[in-house]
Structure formats: C-alpha cells, structure tokens
Length: 270
Image 1 (cartoon, rainbow, N blue to C red):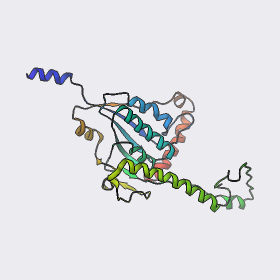
Image 2: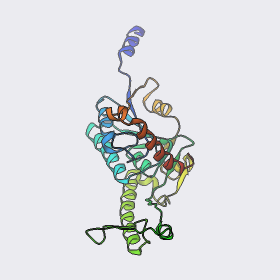
Image 3: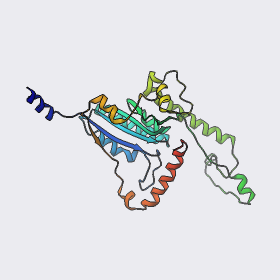
Image 4: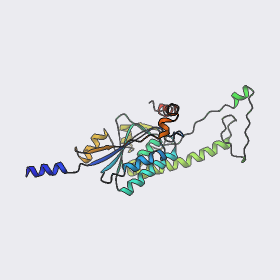
C-alpha cells in the first residue's frame, strides 16, 4: 500500500502557478519597444501565461509607479478578460511600489499582496508642467504658433496660463479620476468601503492592508505555498525584447527609459 501511494505521488501532477512580471513606467515606451509597459508590449506575455490551462493561478509581480491611465486601463482589462475566458484566477504581488497606474494593474487581481516595505496607493490623476512666458519675454524671444481651431493650443508653456485651459484640463482629469475610482471600488468592494483612499495618498504595506487596498503581506512563494501546497510548481515567463530594441539604437533608448523611470520612481523616494 505504501509503495502504491508513493508511485501515485510520484506521477501526480504538481499544482502549477504561472509567474509573470510587470515592471516599469506605464506608457513610457519608445518607438523601438524599449522599456516601459503598454498594452501592445504586454499582450503576448499575458496571452502566453494564460495558455497553461491547467494552471491553478497566474501570479503577477508588479513594480510600477504608474504612468498612462489609458494604458493602465487597457492592460488591466486584458488581464481580466483572459482570466474570465480561461477560468484562471489572478493574484498580484506588489514589490517596491504599486502606485497610481501600478495600483490600477494590481486591482486586476482577485487578491493583492505586497512586501512589508512596499508603497501602495496614489489613487489620483496628476498633470505637471512649467511656464516659461516671462523667461522668453525677458530675452526678447517671440513665440509664434499657428492653429486651425481656436482651442487647438492648450496650456502652452511659452504663453501666459489661461483660466479656460486650466478648467478644461481639470474636467479631463476629473473624468479619468472617476474611471480610476470606479475600477478600484468595483474590484476591492467591501474591503475599502467607508475608507478614505481616493485622495492621491500613498501608504506603507501595513496601513494599505488596514485600508483594504491589499489582502496580505509576505513573500510570493510563501503565500502561494499556503494556498496551493508546498509541492507547487512555479513557471516563470519573461517578456521578450523586440529585435529593434536589442539591436537598433538600444543604448540610447535604454538611457531614455531609465531617465523616465528614475523620474517616476523618485517621487516615492526610490
């Protein structure tokens, strides 16, 4: 009887969890496909992960300070679509930071976990720029802009700020913000009900857990073992770089991507 049990155990299929990584600024992608995350350069990675129909779950490791709300929405929607079609649950694991668009991605998971030192949140919309109108006037520089359509030029940094432009920008921001709040509310449900989380603030992991933004704190491997057993098999799938990103102006593009990433991550002290 002991031998038969051992043989069965040997041939028994181990629980499989497919692991992928979404790392970087969202939308900061060069024309050569170097750096950053967007819907086009994550599509194949996600589709490949969900090809493993026997997988118990897809584990997504997220390390992103955010970026484009549109690309955040597109990537999250694709994850949800694939999860529903393949009937495979998604668990998200936040690393250094899952803020703004990064948290948008995390909410595509049925459950969200993080490290004890992770930075979570920043549910809001921001637009930052500079104004140079007085500077160019001081040096006698004349700004010439010609448009077809009176509202074509909005918030030109070389022209004095117009109240009508600011009003239009804030209306756009409000619409995007409402979409962000709606998605988080739908995905987190009762866990965040009555909590003050839609103010753009970021939190450490313990506070994020208290607010219902995440479900737990710990290492991915340990959490998966608790859920699926210690004999779990992890299948790691990495995003492949395009041919152009590897051989065509790759150094310049990598430098540009690193500068953009440094700017976004530095807002969180990283």
